[in-house]
Length: 317
Image (cartoon, rainbow, N blue to C red; front, side, top):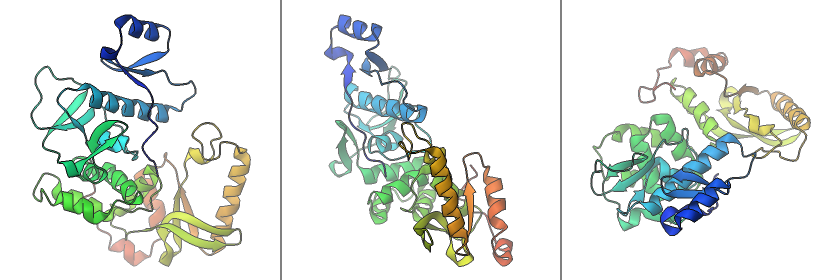
């Protein structure tokens, strides 16, 4: 699972002469992160998704170093600094501070009024953030259900204990989003290896289907394999098929392999799985949730389908 990203140089305007800042911007050595903060220009060819995430991380670092109110970076921004995946990147940097913002406060910062005790603090990439456990609890309280599940899945995979997150949530048992956050936390699964795998499981859970197993192990003629998720009792398996699997450039799973060979290997693997008597359904980012559910329900026992009740605490995505 992702870890905190390497710390790249960050340059604050008050630490340099104005002529130095202008020169580095003019020659392309630096680029602006936010007002008064700059970073070394990234190399060409960085995938857009990676570039957007890195910029959001650097903005959070700049806010953490630049604000004078001793803020604690929190919520989605803290999740970024901790290296957790997010369903959507935050449009602003989130911080917790003990007082409300003034009218002249920076517009690229979202402030949450509150206290963060020493036990709930951490230092990541040189910035004071909420601890990993507190970050998960804050995200569950304030994010849409799918977004919170993405964070919780990844945190459990990193070793965060569900009981520790529950303990933080219990400090505000009647707060906004309390009941939903506990429900989403109960559904979290450390077996999800990407945000898209979490999305796939979420789509199935909100229909009322029984909770699928994750990283389902199988012994096949090509050796032991795992499927992303499924219901072994129905011999039904699913996998999210992302383009990263076949990408050979930066950020790909197989950067030095021929994509044709990767594709052939995946085909042989699927055939081997299906020869064990299991059905394997592949899902991509282009598939609509309703289409995914319709495909799955064709292979679910009729009595189960008749008894399905959508989960009211998991809204559509």
